[in-house]
Length: 273
Image (tube, rainbow, N blue to C red; front, side, top):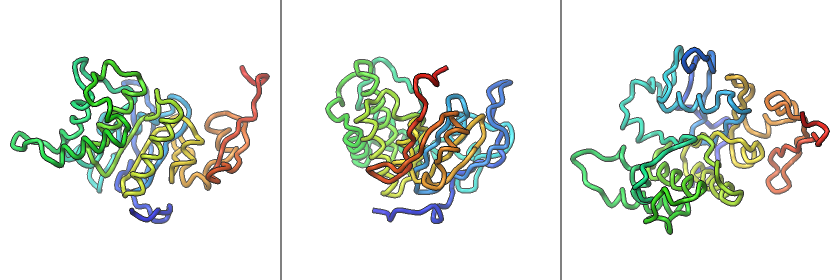
């Protein structure tokens, strides 16, 4: 197991420099600059439509910046070959889709595509990666089921398994706990933390600030397309930040289990508007 790193030890391989991101005429972020700590678990938090998912899309080449550059190991990500980049960076989007007639195991096996070529056959390493990924996501018993038959939470775990099967050093996930019940949410986040401990870099958009503080090493808080604050949760998350980013009056107290920051809203029914 790789020793747990502190913020001072974390060096960025994935960066955004002075990036402007837009959809058509709508500008989402202007001059956005971010360093993603290497071999850490980074949680991206913020209100709806603040640019979290858009930033991740630029990291995985689904959205090309109008200005500025996203780099991986010093190279513009948009100049790196697709398969080569996919061997380093896996991405789980918010709303993935699959063919109606595909079985769970077949979908998870698609995670091995970046490692395939027309000259290579399915290998023992491919098989091992798929079996290991399904076990990690808790879907081994669903392997022969059709994806269309599954519940939303089950499908979400299948997509997580496909990303895990890719066996990349970087794993980016956009709202990976969507559709999961609370037990599976915590199991997934614990799995991501374990992968971080084994040396992978995790970047996840999360809506639950308390889960972000409990599991992540590094928090990026966004509002209106800009980074408001970033750093270790203990150094970053306080009542003033939560009020600024989410407009939520709260107390921030130590989590009784982990000691990490825990947000306790102070609003009551009379504050609802």
